[in-house]
Length: 400
Image (cartoon, rainbow, N blue to C red; front, side):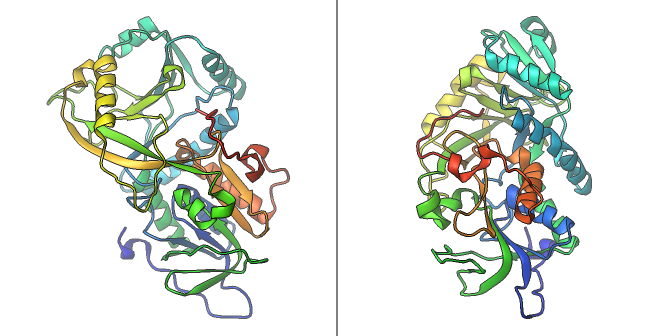
């Protein structure tokens, strides 16, 4: 984002106290929404990022993310995704180009397993719209897909695709327009002091505030190595864009929604050809450990072969179509997939916010609101699943 688009915050006049009520470190989806909610409550907020909002190495960067409410028994995330939807609609309306493409989301399953029944029950209990589609109906609606081995699909007509980079950058612009401040600055690890009253940048400047939020995605373990180095696992993830044949509209909205093949928990997912960028496909399987600063971001031959084989089986008309784009990003996983939203164990004025675990982007507005409530004392009973204490040191994925 150009400096003129977000501005560089004007530092408040020096006084006896800190210059800001809250400094948020990390201008990804979690940090930007937290800063936004704090500013909406009248706080003096400074948002920092080392490389810019939704930059090319950030987990919030890149083209697109799915928003869905199908989560099986984990209806805490069903509620958060639904609660976030209205704010995504608001942000999309503020942007010159769409942020939310409400193309619908279809998740399909090889058998009617507990995840299906739990998702249906959660939607019924929360009074959310969800359509159950058997194989004959799937074939009627989407004949361009091979439905061999699929028993049932769940379709969410009001959900869809979020344009990730555009979303975060637009939100930072809104933050600055509302009186918040943004700076391009890299924060160094804060050390092990008894208290925290400021953060130091790589340029040697100390920025002081009453409270701090560290929403640094895959860089959280680098800022807090002894605390989070063994509890957050950045992994290498590859995604690909395929060009449908010229004149073939079957893989564009409204002929195809966002989709996810549950595949017994080994999920493949993707999006229709949005904004003429190509049909997106990715394998949700956790990749190798990855360093967001130095990791190789070239796609692997194995990754290409994997998605080609899947396309040939499920989307046969795309199996040999040209690959027009690829991207290597990263997840930052907790031990089981739950988010991390908790106070630092030594500094009660500091909040740790992260572990998006590959599914966190859609929850950004709800996460920001929750973090603001926790930081300002409005939240009476924090969610145990988001606590630091619940984060183990061995990966065992449970949230899909």
